[in-house]
Length: 83
Image (cartoon, rainbow, N blue to C red; front, side):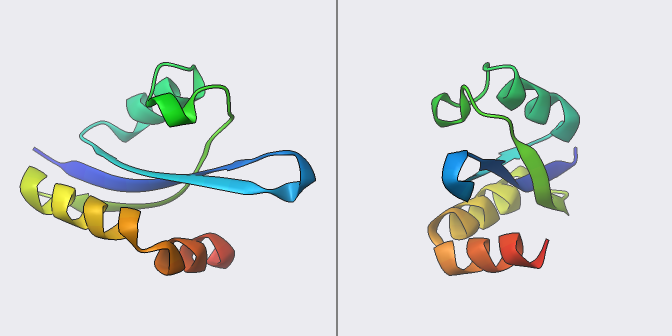
């Protein structure tokens, strides 16, 4: 089965950006859940845009890389600024 690590961004007033990192095996469905208020609690009430994803063949590798990206704010900001 294929897994994805993804980074989504939401713009709020005053041009402030929020980002969220997660993993899933169905990227379209997961983004739809985030945008309809049924995703993670942090993502509810915001409009999200997919800015980055990576594809993996193993769930365990995807989870490890999700953890790394979640904790590395400098890398997240670098990815966001490049988009």
